[in-house]
Length: 213
Image (cartoon, rainbow, N blue to C red; front, side, top):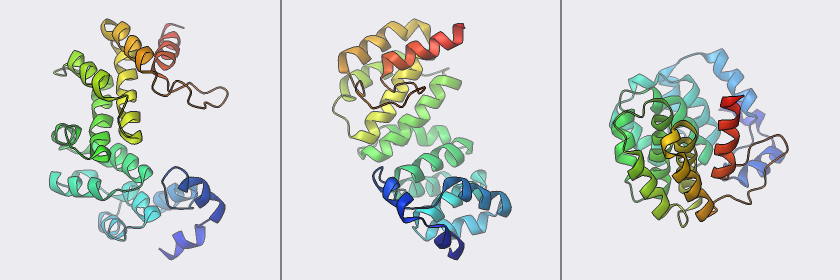
């Protein structure tokens, strides 16, 4: 914790806080610490318990995901208030757990938008990698009905799922693009040069173009 405190940069904290992440630690420096520590599950648990954002991020890098059970991961997700902590928890821990599918089903229907967004993030991963058993048409129905007015974090996760359906599944591409065009979610999102817009129709078109080139 003392080492993390020394890495705190007020300017970086100010930037991160605009995105809801209350820490000022350079993520490359954080990853370097994780590389040095390697896997230390007990230390990871202790770091998570501090409720400090930088410490919780480090925890996700040095834990052993398969040693968490479903109930513990559910509690951790609900305690992950910062977007970056939730993102790393889902991608570096939950996706590697044997409980990932059970949690996906549980979370995607949760009334709390931050929890539901984690469920949609796991759903996007399945859409891209293991779509067998998913009803993609029904997912598009839910997105079409709810994405426009969803809170920001949930909206972003649903939009990612919409784009993945359009990118990976040609038979649903036309409808995915049509939904994106009609809802116009993230259409005017400021996108840096040489980056792909998160606006689903643009995102889908660019990724399909790359697949064909």
